[in-house]
Length: 299
Image (cartoon, rainbow, N blue to C red; front, side):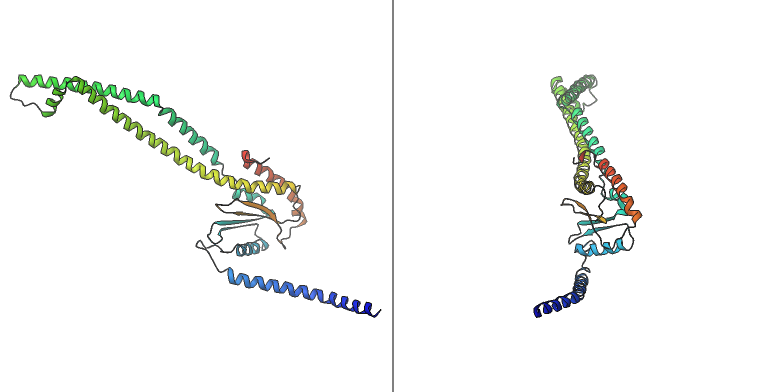
């Protein structure tokens, strides 16, 4: 009986002390957090962002709790390569503005593919041989014409001994018609080849510039698609409710896979009317994301 009394008193003391201990623990945690932020958050990277992500989170959360619908923290992390996105459910219509795929990718791909086909067709081996052949023929005819002109000048010189025959005319006259035809064909054929090569390189450079631009957009769109597919997964699996979550968070970095998922931000309270409107807004967001993803959609 005495033991029961002792146990009863001990339990009463524990129950009495529990709120005090919990409150003290919370106060200690808050103090630790404040000390952490005071120590680390003044540190900025070369682009002016926070070195530590937790500092960016703190600033974003404060903004959201003060009434801002969405916050974007760019150039975060030690190297300034991370971007953080926070969207409250009031700002679902802003998600694709920031994370949506760039639609110019398909247009650019079509453009460079058409340019590649045009270049391949225009500068085909058979067409190049024909062009050089025609150029060589024109050169041969030109050489033949020069030879005839030189011969005419030489005959005129023989009739008028006082007039001296110019050196180029003498050389052409001595080379003969065959040599002049060969020289003309070789010179014009070479010039035609050089001009074709210059035109080919210009066309190829333009094609490469468009391809390079398209490829950069393609890689970025692939990362965005990863984040958007994750959003679809979370929304559909929740049956368009996400009742225990309050915001969408996305993190991006150039050399990493993009991430996006819902989280709970304590003290971000929605009205009953707002909560009732979210399922329809989630359905609309799903439709918009699927349309934006197009052929990248993961079934």
